[in-house]
Amino acid sequence: MIQHTKRAAAETLPPARRRGWLRALGPGLVTGAADDDPSGIATYSQVGAQFGFGMAWVMLFSYPLMAVTQEISAQIGCVTGAGIAQNLRRHYAPWLLRLAVGVLLVANIANLGADLGAMGAAVGLLVGGPVAAYTAGFAVLCIGLETFLSYRRYAAVLKWLTLSLFSYVAVVFVVGVPWRMALLETLIPNLQLDAAHAQAMVAVLGTTISPYLFFWQAAQEVEEQLRRTVQPLYVAPAAAGAELARIRTDTWAGMGMSNVISLFIIFATAATLHAHGVTDIQTAAQAAEALRPIAGEFAFLVFACGIIGTGMLAVPVLAGSAAYAVCEAFGWVEGLDHKLRDARAFYATIAVATMLGVVLNFVGLDPMKALYWCAVLNGVLAAPLMAAMLMIASNRAVMGEFTLRMPMRVVGWVATLAMAAASLAFLVL
Image 1 (cartoon, helix red, strand yellow):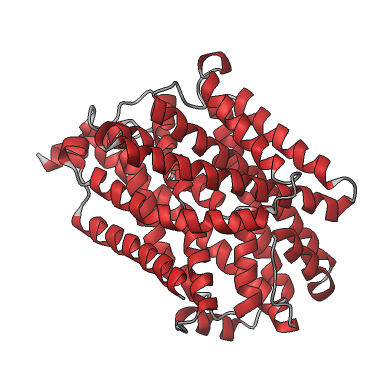
Image 2 (cartoon, rainbow, N blue to C red):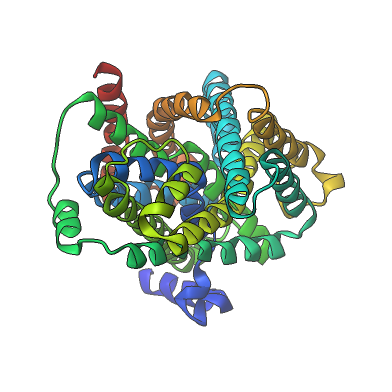
């Protein structure tokens, strides 16, 4: 029976998969790349500037936790044919759904404000001119692309935008990293229990394991099923072998790339800013500007261009995940594959969330302070939401024969407890 299932799965393997594993990369790759958004770049830059290489080990620690968490969210979408919010609506108390979606909206809007502001500031650093106009222009461009491009074309755009992350690889090889020291401190953790390290730990974990990524990747698995006209696994179990293998490859590769890039940002800022006594970085644009006199014009240009490229990738993901969550919660039509006339609430949510992010840059509210408090909310939300995902993915009534394997359950609960412990340590210290 098992061999028969494997043969059937192989026969249903999509052509893209047969042409090579690189073609299988999609939702996981984009999700991982979107995790390195401008606000994330600011977080990693601050960690590198403040602690040097001392907290680089966190990126290795967080990788399996992040990858398993995202793989669980992808499996929920692939098996059930529904996103996280829709599964919460179907199987859990309404208050949990409202709380999760409400906090997600607040955090995403703050993130959008910070990211759009950083993109506008980066253009201002590169060419001069009105930063506010650039910020609003990027918002309008992202809304337009997300609304009027077909899902197939838009997914391809997002996939190509992931290449912008390699700008930070270039920076590392330009600035001259002391590799022996960097690798030693990455591989041998230096644990310090004080308020500054606890805050940095929560910031890094909250940036790498973020609720909006759960909602986005699950929803993108549903979109991919619609695009390829395939059924959810609970309807077409014969395809499970191929689909789950694709998800695993896609997710672990995407999260691996995300964490390597994050590690390189820490290396670059540790070798330059920290080494020259610059220990306080609040924004990604500030990190780029600080690099200019220390690492040279090329490093500055590449770092600043990377902010724009990653922002173009992350802003649609942030707005899109908010729209998926809201529409799934209310049972409205949702999805990037729908025309504007068929999913007005979905695209309206994208537009409103994005423009509210722009507004944060104009009302005197510091987007970075708003982002800080929303990171705390995200950290508080992440652990219970991860627990809810684990319960969904372990529930045979929801997942049928595709409930989580025991190793994934164990790692998933370790990730959940790590997020809860980090948030608790931050609040206590």
